[in-house]
Structure formats: structure tokens, C-alpha cells
Image 1 (cartoon, one colour):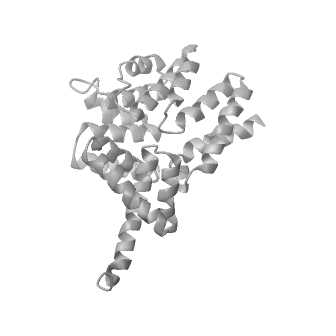
Image 2 (cartoon, helix red, strand yellow):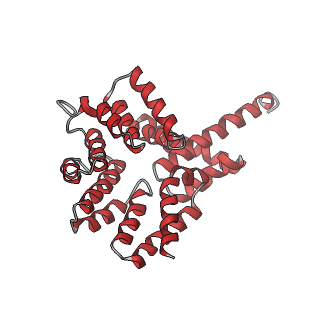
Image 3 (cartoon, helix red, strand yellow):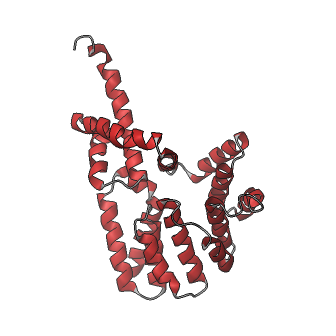
Length: 263
């Protein structure tokens, strides 16, 4: 033990850093709340019990995920970290990544960020090379293009693209597709929008479907139902870790605004 003593502070910092990484992974992949709490004890408080649990989680969940069907898990962790950055910084980072490597994912990521920032013309120019040929039916391209169609007030075009997306690709793809599809259906006055919003909320990977569904209910004059959804979001926010609240702050803020409007 005396031999290890000089290295204990360094080992402590390494394991605590691992706890932060594991916590991000747990949040990004929507693990059980008790796992997030245990990892939070290690990441935030640095408790020995939490750090011991971190080592277990790393070997039982994180490392196997990163080894096996792991690319999706790795991207989920990266998204969790990336979501904490300001939008302008994320756009600059995405532009740098695209300049270094012009891949489908990098191009689509940049276009999605530009669209979210209201820069539809830039997003369209970024996405244009992918809209023809080999990648035209790729889920990433379809989702990004559909989001642009909605921003440009072309909901029918968005719906046509979203109906081509394979919902079995991943939970995140399913959540995003159904959320956008519900918005496209609502914009066209279709009665299917309500059911699609509810489907999007099942096993959702983000708070966006619930926030948008509550806004939809308010627009439909169904204030009581909207309050129930918003109350559930408030409970989720109150129980969530600080990291998750920051990651989902856009939707929690939308929910807070809707609650004020309903008073």
C-alpha cells in the first residue's frame, strides 16, 4: 500500500474523470435514474462509493458498448458533451470537422446546426451535395432535409421524406423522425398529428417530443391535457442531474414558458 501511496491522488483524479464520462454516457443513452444518481455521486461529489460504482459501470456498460455495437453509443456520449456548448461554437467546430473530413455525417451535422440557428440558406447549401445520388435516402440526410423543409414552410415535402426513414435504425432516429413528422402533420392540419406526437414520446431520447406535444395541445385549446404533460416535465426536471438539465434546457425552458401562459 505504501508503494501505491504516491499514486493515489492521480488515480483518484483518473477515476473521477471516468465518472464524468460514465455519467454523460448514462444520460445520453437514457439509463435508469438510479445509475445516474450513483455515477453522479462519483462525478460531482467524488464519493468513494460513487467512484467504486463508476469502475463497475465502466467495465459492465461503457467499455463493452464502446467495443461492440459501440459506434452509436460513442456518438451518443459525444452528443451529450456537445449539447453543452453554445450553438455558434458548435457550428464553428462542425465547420472545422467538415473541412478536415467531408463525410456524410459531418456535412449533415453542420447543416442541422445551421438550420437550428435559422441559417436555412447556409444549411441548404451544406446539404445540397447529399440530396442527389447515393445518400439521398440515408436517414441522416432525410431527417436534416425534412427539418429544412419545415423551416421553409414545406410540410408536405418534409412528411414525404420522413415517411421513408427506417424507425428501427436507433431510438434517437425514431424520436427525431416522429417528432418532426408530427410537426409536419400539424402544419397541414392532419388529425394524425396527435397520435404521432404520442408515439414520439414513447421511449424518447430527449424532452423535445413532450415539450412540443404540450405546445400542440395548447394550440388545440386543450389546456388541461397540456398541464398534465407539463407537470410531468417539471417532475423530470426536478429529479434530473444538473448535466441533464443543461443538455435539455431548451425544452425545459419551453415547458416553463407554456406553464406561465396557462396560468
